[in-house]
Image (cartoon, rainbow, N blue to C red; front, top):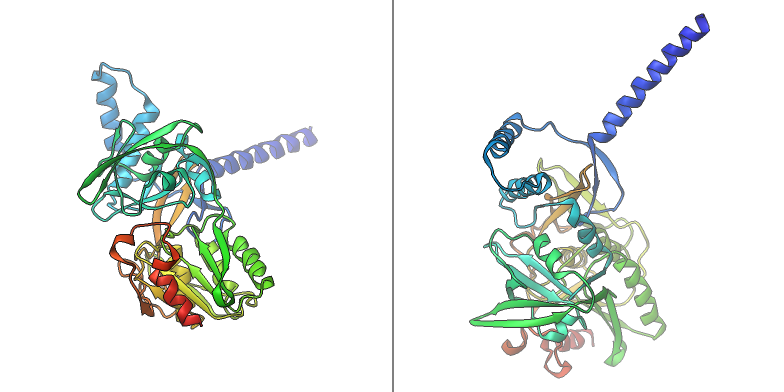
Length: 402
């Protein structure tokens, strides 16, 4: 009897512990750094929800349940409420992502998805513009250019309330089917019919220029870019390059750890790559941990569309005296977003940190000034494929390295 009693007590205690564990898991969310320093999964407790918020939603729900005569999709109502709640931050980089859209959202970070091949973002006045078409993508072949404002996608009218995820879910889809885009370019209204393809990004393109100068064009900082950089650099070294030009023009950024990984391959061990500050002003310093593999003179090319992770790399190399910058001032996106994956499977992307160069220079809304300012001819400023003989920025970089 005593044994059975102890067993019952033991089972009861274990059941309580099990329930506590399940409750803990149910009230946690997963966070991974979409644009952050790592992709490790962490567990963080959800903050207590403001009773005023839940009370107001409950009141609205009660009225809808009692009086609304149409069909009600509870999940769509909740998603719409949360989308609007986050939009109230008035931060062009923060958004709520419904569960149904998370798979598509996450696919973009791997550089393998079905779409037309464009990077786009929101301006401070809530317009959605193309930052850069991906080279050799359907969008690039169709003639879309950086700076094009997206007015309409198929039958969807783009407004100041539209989110980047809204567009992403319309633009992506079945390979072979086309997307109709209505674009404003300056005073012109243009329409494009762009076929979808499976977009597999090769983020780094290389060639050897005159005087054994290596040229490396980094399109974006998606997953695996830093590894590609190292592989491609080693290939160039085997070809006997004596200097290197890294082209970051029209590179909209991406995953921070990919940019810091490239900087790590170019800086002496222990050098500061990046300083980040959170909402409380707490600093975190990222330093190089490996011995550098790049041992030749380097010049970076930048323009007004070099943003985010591009600016992290440019700032790290400039401040540490490893590279000169030729071209134009960068875009000025100096904030980092984290994506929180909720227990429901939905996502919350919010701005959590501001980053600064190793010399503690602010980037956000300011950008990074080039060491040697060179503009392209006005008629070529928005072109993706610039003929070499007209590429004043690239030619100046070559002259500098000679």
